[in-house]
Length: 459
Image 1 (cartoon, rainbow, N blue to C red):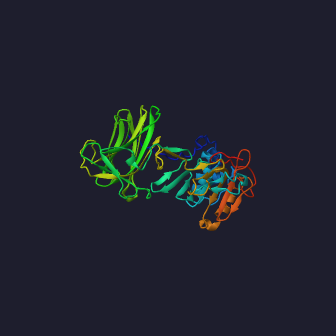
Image 2 (tube, helix red, strand yellow; image 1 turned 90 degrees about the vertical axis):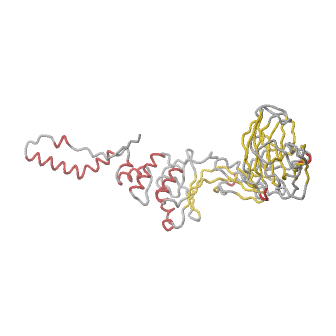
Image 3 (tube, rainbow, N blue to C red; image 1 turned 60 degrees about the vertical axis):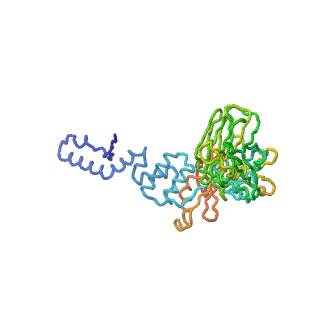
């Protein structure tokens, strides 16, 4: 049921007791009339204004501006709507931090301003505040980029874009548990022939393996078993790279050593679509993601967890549809460009291995926020920042003929303490000062504006 509520303005209280009071003679009647006239014309507006002192944003222009000025906020580009909005903003944000500043800027110069938190490199902390800057994505070379989420700039997200697309790099060790990750001819196989024909793997450097059915039986698979200590409920992720030839469907799964329990997926290598998923026994499928790469390669990633066990088998089956039982033709197959098996639910970038498992650390981040990468990848780079008590306010020159920042200065002069830095390109920078925090402005007269900074302020 929908209800409609109609709101109407409450009329000012009338002086009914006086109007209805007894009049002794004509003189008293005339005195009453004169008083009522004077009250309505001279006193009533002030009474109405006084009545709204507790909620000045509902009052007239004079009341709103008086309340704003009493609170120490000067006004520019006055309109009743803007002034009322700022009054409401003050009520919602009595500390008047960056949120209120943004509301102020939006009310005066809508959609043309920018407020940014400023950060400082950890490595050059001794130079503070000379290196303050807004956080922007960094490009370090070698396809490596650094991205910041605005919360933990001391440990940013670092990515590398290559043949696998955009992959996250990690400062903690990660391991490919499979040996001979790209040479599946050294794995265990069932009713297949594994060979090379000059086709390159998706990395564009190593040779891919061609997995071909060598008879008409039901198996047609390559697999590798890893024996390890497995905690109950432990999660594993299997990544494999396949390219269709005669066969365009592959069956990829995680299993125990005897394949009596498994979880897996049938994937169409032409489209990357999942045809069918499966799980049985102690294995449980968590997620599947298949993506098409360049040169017809398909990257298939599946994550599952096992209730118990001491072996994990990474298996790739040649098949011709969404079924595990079929007879091959003894000559069809597809290409294998590498596989990776790792602990955990996060699929990381491919680690090529030989006769041994391999552990890598993509980069090392020291206490000064400097990231060091493997030799030949890219030079060490400053990527770690700490939040400062500074913010920048930017207005384009076209706003108010370049007078916008001067108007901000006038508007906040009465409430902010002294120390504003004016920079080129109409950049206005406030700085946190004082024991209780505050925004600083040049030529300020009184007071300190409380400032709500992102992160933790450090001296």
